[in-house]
Image (cartoon, rainbow, N blue to C red; front, side, top):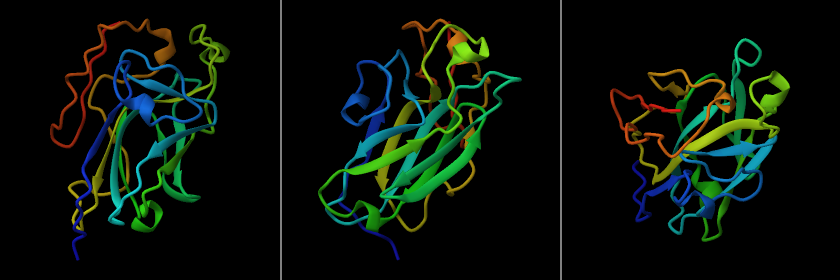
Length: 196
């Protein structure tokens, strides 16, 4: 049975001068040119509830802080209302999709998405730059759409970005010359080019 909803699709961008700060709660760095880092072991996002009681389909573009061979990936655990909705080990820039059940979103009150990064570490401890912050994942974008019975993308394993491998981010010098216009659906994957 399809869930019919009048809820609008919500698009969030976590780059500087975008709308991400309206959704971040605790555990976040300052927005940067193309993303915002989740800092420490736990970060929280405020998501809208649904007045119709519909479930949400959530898609997040993110990338872990990695520094091979010492830190090959990061664990990511996402929970809503104490219910785990996604978990995986992620080694590269990735798009993840998951559902937030109707019972967790019903009501006009905002919903809290808890992001846990148990492997976060300061780059300085890995000799991967001078950044002393505990870095887990950088969020690039998030979209919420009313859930239908037949999702376009199956829930499950993360879908990596085709190229390039984005590891050891703290070593790079970020400027406003980051090109994120390359993000777009192409054979089910996301693409991104960085210019340091």
